[in-house]
Length: 218
Image (tube, rainbow, N blue to C red; front, top):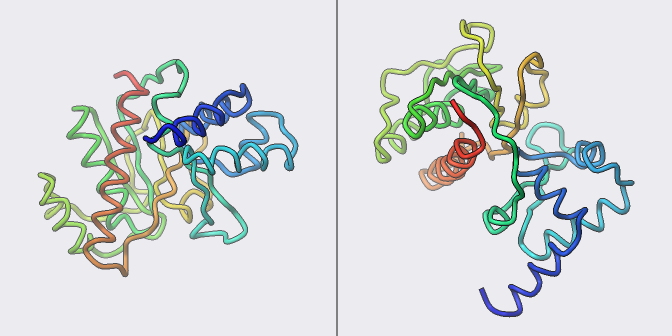
């Protein structure tokens, strides 16, 4: 980074409140309402701090693909080295959920198993008949075999996970099990897109899985 860019990053992080926001977003994407609850800030003051962090490239904000009135804040890779010490969460099995269980949640479950040697299952709130062919191709290019996997409904999951991760705004906003810890990753839906769209979803999920692995213990 240039000196000017580094200076903007350090100015943005030279505030306890903004560091608390960075720490909160380390766990997953949050709406402003969730961040207000986590920080105790009023709406206008929270918006100011989020503007500073976004201008420095430490977070990004985007609208929900489900409820258009919602916005999610996401921690950018640039901010990861500045996250404080966070107590690790004991996680052996993760349930990844999206709408159709045809790409994003399948990527996440396969990556979790590959990167951690721990258990993972995936499901959809409105499962498709089959995994999208582009998802199978992209996964294969990265050493993951999804050719014989089939989408399943959330109610068909027969294991009790230690953590539920929604990788889809619509699934997150549809009401998921709340008796275990929850996290949300706001990953754009690649269905209907081209190969590059699926590759972008895969890479984003791979980064998140690596981050989650560092936050957890078996």
